[in-house]
Image 1 (cartoon, one colour):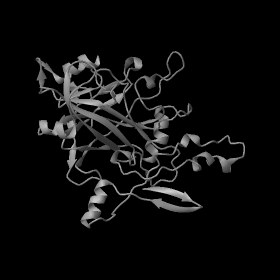
Image 2 (image 1 turned 180 degrees about the vertical axis):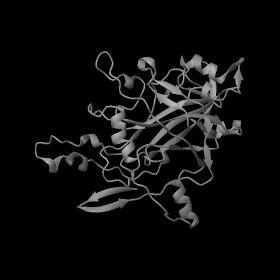
Image 3 (image 1 turned 30 degrees about the horizontal axis):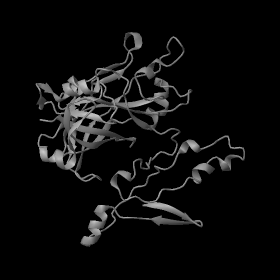
Image 4 (image 1 turned 180 degrees about the horizontal axis):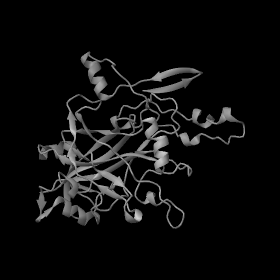
Length: 338
């Protein structure tokens, strides 16, 4: 669904998805809820220096062409509008995948645009899927080993105020003023995933820590994973389930380096005051069959080398329980072709 502007009147352009058309044909189509997004809007066009004054600051935004409605699932809302009870928030939080903290623990997005979850129960020529991927990719930074816990890479996720405002540094004082005092700390994260492919999710324990209070200021990520609490309630995405994991207060704070820069940015993906962090590990659903790879994925594909793999692509959604800030993780469940 999209808005079309016609001579000052607001006109809705609505099309049905494949599921909607199926329900319409069955005679049981009914709209029970809706969500609103602004994917096509670039708020960077807001111009406080417009020569014609404040009434024109948002002129370019208001003149942005609005997209027509799409029927494809992957072309719908990616960034939904959020609602906050407080009306005095100067900054809104964002959520980021931390690809900086540690080569030994934080997973990164691969050159193929995905995070790999490797099924190491499958071997080819005596090597596990992870070992073969490391050879083909040239490193292990984008590979999570299914069920390996803290012995594997993890998806390290941070929330906070990600701003280029140099005055709003990631200090403990700014954390207190702009995060803690206005309730923008996520004590929990909601992880949504397709349980046809993902078996379970693990997150940090309450006593875990991410801080740079160690000698020399090097950030320390101390983790002891625990299973997330899975809900049986339905989600807005078909076949997806929700699991709740712990969110821990992020204690990586501003520290000036020898050149006058911020040393904490070496370890954190949030440029301003930090709020919470979590770290996620995953297991692959043990009931995935070869037919599932044929039906939902691709088989006998290379990943940059000569070894072939079978894989299924899916998306994992991570949302802060308090801030509602959402991150999408593109995931590739992969095993060596037998």
